[in-house]
Every structure is written in C-alpha cells, then in structure tokens.
Length: 462
Image 1: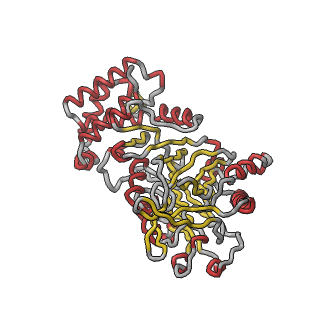
Image 2: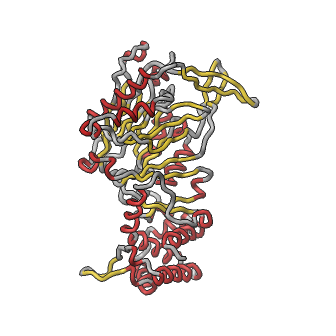
Image 3: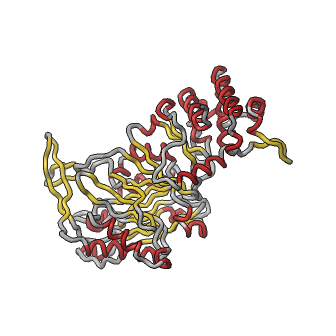
C-alpha cells in the first residue's frame, strides 16, 4: 500500500543522492518563470494540493481525508515521471509544496508522538532509501530561514519536515522524545526558557582508579560514599531553589550523581502538594553517574518521570603523573533528541562529546539542534568557548556547566567562570548579551564551599 511519508522519504532520498551542492546553490535563486512552470506541473498532476482563494491559487493543508488511493497514486506517478525526466528543479519544487501542505498532518503526528515513550521516524522505508523524516518543531530563537548563509543542501529548503540522513548519522542510533505540551507551562506565557545551572559543590564523592588493559592505560570512577543521603539532599535543594525562581530547565554537572539519586528525586517530586509540584522545572538534567563503564546523564521531567538516559559517547583523556589515561567507558551509540514546539530540538552532550567537533557538528547537521546542554567535569573552559561559535552559526544555543570539584592546583586561571550560556540574540541587542558568564565563587580556590551557587539565564525569542 502506498504511504505518503514513504513517498516523500523516497523523493528526498533521490534529490539528496542525485543533486550537487552547486544545484542547491543555484536553485536558491530560481527564477519566477521557473517557479511558475513547476507550480503548473504539480497543479496539473495533483490538483488536490491546491485550492482557490481570494488571492488566487494557494497550497492546501492536507488532512487524512485527502490521502486517498487516487491522490497517492497521482503523487507517485508524478514523482516517477519527473525522476525519469531528471527534472530535479520540479522535484525539489514538488517537495517544497508537499512540505507546506503537510503542516496539519505533521502537527497531528506530533500529538501522537507525545503519547509515546519514544518515537521513531514516520516513514517505514528508512533502511532502503537512507533517510528518515519527522515533524520539525519550530524554535523561537531560530531564524525562519535557518542556514540562509549556505544553501548547499536539501534541508535548507524544508521548514515543516525534519530530514535525517543515514549517511550523516553514521553508526549512531537516534531516539526521539516529543515532549507533551503541558510540560512547559511557563514557556507558553513568556515565549522564553529560563535556565538554572549549578556546579553543585567543591567536594568530590568519588576517586579515580588507574588500570591498564590490552596495552592501553585507562581510568575508572569509583564512588566512595556508603550513603548518598547528604548528596541527594543537596541535589534536591538545588532543584527546589530553581523551582522557586521559576526555572524551566535545571542543569547539573558531570560525575557528581549516585545510584540512589533518581529514585530520591522522583520520590521527592511525587510527595509534593499540587501547588508546589507545579513549580518544579520542566526538565531536570541530573548529574551524571559513572557505573559499569558507562557515564550516564538522566533527564527527568517535572513530574518525576525519567524521559531518557544519555550515555557519554567519547572518552576523556587525562594525564596522571605525566602519562596519558583514557576514560574506560563503553558507548551505546544512542543519541536522544528532545522535541518541543517553540524550543525546537534539544540534545545532551556530556563534556568531551561537545569538544569532539566532528561529533557535535554531526548531530547539529543531522537534527538541526536548537539547544545543546553540556554537563561537564573539566579542568578548563577555553576549548568549550571555542566550540560555542560553531553552534551560534547554526542558530543553536548552548548551556555549559562545570563543577568546582574539578578544580586542581595550578589550573585556577581556567576556572574564572564555572559555566556559560551561549545564545543567539537579535541584531539590536548588545553583543555582550551573547555570552552569559557564571563566575566561580572566590572560596572555591581555597577549598571552601557553601553549597549555595546557582545561576540563571533566560533564552528568548529573537
């Protein structure tokens, strides 16, 4: 049986595999006469895609009732004919018309995805055609014409369809989470996201173990506390402080989690009165926990439910006594993408993952990310700041939070700031607003910690 999403995915695949960067650059300046030719071809072949209005002919928003056998057969026939003629201007023009006409269908798909624990792509032929398609949530700080500076690929011409190319994704496995509308109640009111970020504390609750295996030297993390009650009370204190300050997302650093943390926080949230429960941040990015050679960040929602767990993919290299040791983690290759209308697409990149430029750009290109959250445990901030500009170029904001527990003697100059929010601003705003700095407290350099530090920044529409 013919399926609209499979036909669209096949059309995308043919264009991606057949058209050069030069083609896309030239198509970005296609003439009015050529646009009229394309529209006429599509209108004759599939008249249901158009309707008459007071301003002339416009593209119809399709509903499920329009997806008749006749419509799908006509669409498939037109695609086949244009492919046989190698009329790729018309094929791309047809795809753009479909992108506009599928708005209602894609919004309905989002509503269905919101009810699922996680989602996969809409088309069932992903393995054969090499691309997947999903609804593309809008983002209030993303330019309407994202990638306007480089019209050299297909996604530059799509606005409602999120195109995922297997060739870009590589061996990674993508899982998608369309967050329910009620999860961000304050976002609807202020069209902005308030971020809370905390370095948590100066003390470490683990020790580093050095080992070697198969000629390679590794380090592992071993947690020391027999009871993590005090640690979890501090984590909860930060969550509640963020809640009282009407934060939408609260972010913790890397490695300072523990085995009892998820259950503790979940129970705390579920024991709250309805009035207090409403205050809890929509997303809680808990500190990562290192266990069984996996460094994992848990993402929890405001109701105390685990949305997903993001594994660190790229090991950190650390020098001990003049010798290099590699973090002994196993990657599960799964990349979790959170979708929300108005915020776009969020990814968690644990410390080193963000610094692996090829990996970071791979994810940005594949999923058109609009917000990257980077929990870290790092001896410096310089390399992270260098990567921020790559994200800004793609309309992607970044939240980076480090931990004072990573501070070591001789590296104090790297810890003037313990976190940053790098955000896109409008052309009328002061450039200094692009980078919000979180200065470290002075007591940290003397090993002191009052456990009070938490920082706030708001990312809003542009």
